[in-house]
Length: 220
Image (spheres, rainbow, N blue to C red):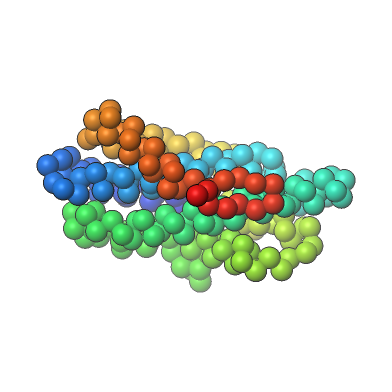
């Protein structure tokens, strides 16, 4: 998942590099706000994803099996809450990105480039489309009762089948963070300090999902 997210960040950053041309236009702040919303959704995906992998380890099933039953059930509930939030973020990301008509005008190939990265759920099991679909259906149809099957969804998020390559995942996360820093820096270059603070605050409110012990919900 993290590798594909990085590729999308880089595509949007490249397409939005001419945001300065909108400085005198009425929709300048609207576009900047959407770009910041996208930033925070990416940021939260990598932050909670990294924390979840660190806790679950390379084999989430064995991690859960080593716990007392009460602890395992509590842990699985918390992991599922994180995965639900990840699913919501991915869906919201695609909604914001598809609505970036300013970027599409500037770069007509934007949507095709992103679609190529997302891939198809029939193309490969670890495509971003397949991962997002699996997490979405897990969140609305929580039919798995077996602890091992529930734990496997952590590996699904990482784009793995069973065991997670922690070294590769750590590198993908580091690369994504580097791209996100460059993405945010690109936005900062074209906004005043006051604009950046005000719009960042609004974007943070619009994209924040309140963590809870059992399920994730949009903070209102």
